[in-house]
Image (tube, rainbow, N blue to C red; front, top):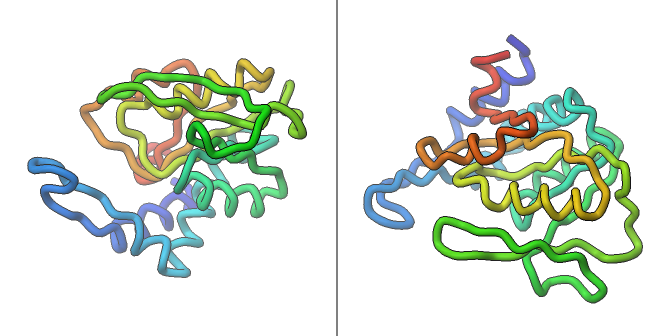
Length: 184
């Protein structure tokens, strides 16, 4: 078992705040805010994410709006690679590349700059905080592939079980940080 993954798992177990019945009754919300606010816990999580991204051969990190920006930026800095902010629709100036995708409650769209950033042929690892249904990560994958990039994997901190996100992303490697210590 990797000490890097073990340290991240310990930090998550100690610092994640569990909130019952949020955002609605019957849901247990895992709040990462205390993890991000604690210097040692944040460092342990970033180190774990960086190890996973490095193992997947990341040449660039794709950070998903919004906590994926925060986590992905720290990972990219640690690895000495660039970060591509994958934004929600309407947040970037034109020209943009857009990908619509479906969610459990409707549809949404993601965008990246249409010029000024060349990602053709790059191995990009997507970083986000939580995997639920997998809709956003899947949409980001389609968007990056349409721009000529290769999505080398998905790396997330937490996974909400029972929502089939893992199955939706089955065509690329997935690392869930709070589970990686158990499987490493």
